[in-house]
Length: 198
Image 1: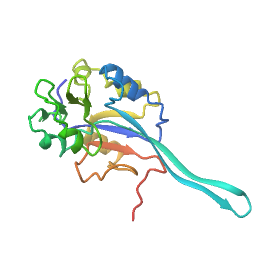
Image 2 (image 1 turned 45 degrees about the horizontal axis):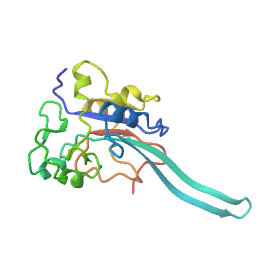
Image 3 (image 1 turned 90 degrees about the horizontal axis):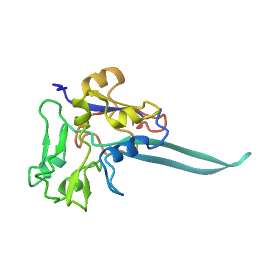
Image 4 (image 1 turned 60 degrees about the vertical axis):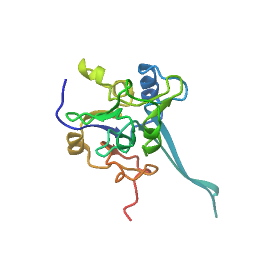
């Protein structure tokens, strides 16, 4: 199925339990070696224990999980940093791919991406990353991370449609500035993940 709109991810972080089913399913589908993960689940924690005058020691801790892969950015930093031209952005779908027959494993894409999307495989001396499961989409199937999430916290589709449905948040606590690459991701943040409005 060919789409003529920029594709993106929607992450409902308020539902994510950190189970890592999305990450494991992606790893399995792509037959990735130990240490390589196209989709990663991060834990963000902040706060401390405080001495309360009447209640002893109480916690003031906040924590949440966040699932992230390649954001197929509008201005991907990996693309212009690839010296071999192996990284391409599809003009119809906006999906950013690393052409494996061209990649020479220089790893400049790995260093350029603020989200850690490209992963270097030392066994084949090449970098690779999420390709939006284009093989599954061609069969009319969901992305493996989407179909595997038990909480249904991940969706995909034309990013403008996702923004109309879920808003325009594309950066939360712990993430790089969305101004760097204009990521095609929409997030419903966990209550403790929202950036302060100051």
